[in-house]
Length: 408
Image (cartoon, rainbow, N blue to C red; front, side, top):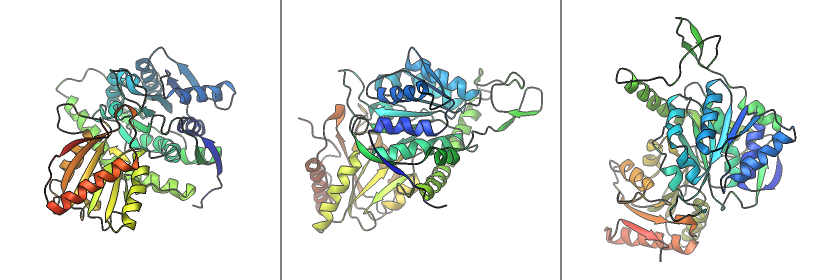
């Protein structure tokens, strides 16, 4: 494939999401507005009102209802999308599990925002990290360009017949959602050709013949029925098997998209920055990676072998890639923009630490909780984290394995 012609738009992250959904030929969008996601559904509702899409837009009375409507539409074979944040995502909690359990490939944009109390509308990752075990694929974007690209890719990944799992694409509140950025966008017809039409698998119906896996009165089947100890375990295992297949599909779709867009985000699962010969490295997700890369560049000029591992997907966790890219690193700092209260560290720290436990190099792994409630993470604080890693490298000893960076 050849890289196609694109145009540059000055838009924020929310607008990039809405545009990507518009171009992806979505059948049903059901949503309830919540700051800082509101711009997404506002802008998409304008597309509907102006006749630019043939999407059924459903404005529900709550986020719980929004995801329920998307689940129902997806179960009938429709391509569906919704968006939420913070308390809205928390209100969806029950239906997140139902959606993944019904193998409904809903795509949802999450504009990461802190959970109350106290009430806060700014960025941290506490909302989506809570849902890491809900059976949804999770993609975290570094910038608005990646947000646009990831939404388009998400429809292809979620609807792949070997996956059939819902996906949340996460972008940092205000840092991305409300900040103007140059975004390269594809033509409508290019995106529509890339995502194609949704296909559904064939399953054995009640009448003993193969039927499409969707709710259709002509071919009646049941989705999400009472499922006790006789079959529940097997259906949960099937979800795990789909998660095991997902990394390959994510990488294939990512690679195919790069051939028409000219853009890559690592290998689609991780984005390794100067890790080939790094002695010390940090790990993070989201927009903080951009600032961290500038710090790494500065340290490299000073002769420090520093690197960064950005997780693009947190679910499925790219375990093999984590171990491979960190095989030479001797000290690792994991940066979490959320905390697992009473769990001795943040969620990403727990995952990275267990990933590297059997690594031959067995690096020192420390955790830095940062940026809760939108607290800024300037280069100076990140630089101090790398200085701490240099001290660990020198002394071969960790004084405190869990710290809070930037708190008064």
